Image (cartoon, rainbow, N blue to C red; front, side, top):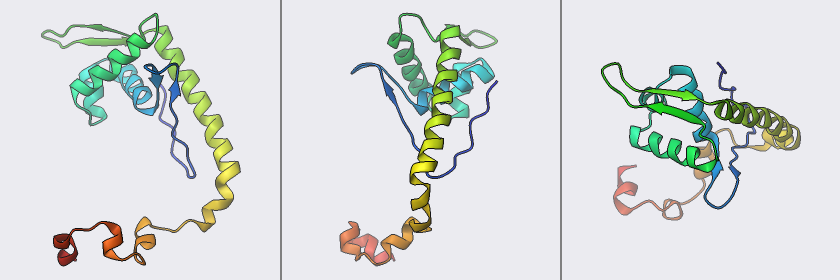
Amino acid sequence: MRSTPKITYPSIRFRIDFDRESSVGPGKIALLEQIERCGSLSQAARNLNMSYRRAWQLLDSLNNCFVEPVVLTAKGGRGGGEATLTLLGERLIHVYRAFDVKIQARAARCFGPFKTGVRKKARAARKNVPRMARGLSKGERRKR
């Protein structure tokens, strides 16, 4: 079992596009990791605060992305369904996470020097912007 890496800043979120219809990104990888941990698509969805329908859509798109499936599923019953990563699914997680480590290190090297110039809170940047420019409605301006 793998642990999700701790996010440090600056960070990069990336997606690998294999073609116009086939991609793998942080959401699908997180879903695969949860399936690996708990062996259930519905539990993986709950762990990620995701609807079962959305998890099924992501998994279906992943399984249709490759010639071989990344996850094998068995329909639920009294004890619930089962979801198991294939070797391809395990390899996909491993390669994605290894690439993630390399790209995060590169981001830290390249963009780390800019970190000291970043405002501490996004709200600080908004203090000097008039409410109208922030797109607040008349009612929202009154509440403040």
